[in-house]
Image (tube, rainbow, N blue to C red):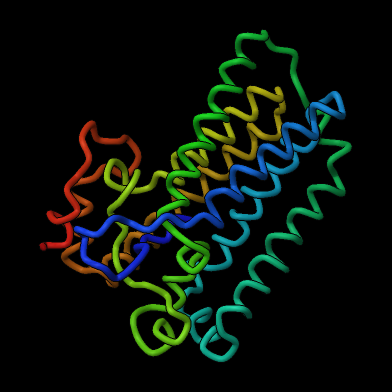
Length: 254
C-alpha cells in the first residue's frame, strides 16, 4: 500500500496537496466499526474488518509484485478501472467474504487478558489509524494499491494521470514505510484490544509476506527513481523513524 509517488508534479517548495478521499475514508471506516461494536456489545466488526483488510492485502501483494511485468501487460489493454475491478472486486472482496463466512469460528478464538493490556491496544489502534490518515493524505487513489508500479513513466502513466515522483512529505520525511509500520502496529493493537488470537496470526502472516514484498518493491523503486531513491534509502530509515525530518531538496537534488 506504500506506493511512493508524490501528490503533484510541482516543485518541492510548494506545499504538498492533501488527498481527502483515502485519508478520511480510512478514519471513517474505523469509527463505523467501533461504534457498531459498541451497539452490538461485543468485538465483531473491528476484528473482521482488520483481518479482511490485511489478509486481502496479503493476497493482492502475493499476486502482484512477483508477476509485475505480466500485470503491466494486462493493464495496458484494460486500463486503470480494469485493475481496480480485479484487485478490489476479486482479490480483496473475495478474501473478505471468505473470512466473513468462517467468522463464527475464528471470532471466538480469544483469550481473557487484563484490562490494562486492552487499554494499550486501544491507544495503539488510535495512534496507528491517525498516522495512517496522515500518510494516506499524502497520496491519492491513483497513488495507492500498486498503481504507480503498474503504470511506470510513459504513455500509460500520462494517459491515466499517474504521477511519477518520489514522496518525501508528511511522515515520509521520517520513515520510508509509514503505512507498513502502522499496518503492523494496528494489527497488533487490534489483537490486544479484542483479545483475538486470529489477529495475532494475521500479524505473523502479514510480516512474513512483507519480508518478501519489500525486496521486490525496493528493487522496482530503484529502477524507477534511480539516484533519488538511493539518496532516500541512505537518509531515511525503513521502519524506525528518524528524529528530524529529512529535507526533500536533499533527496530530489534541487
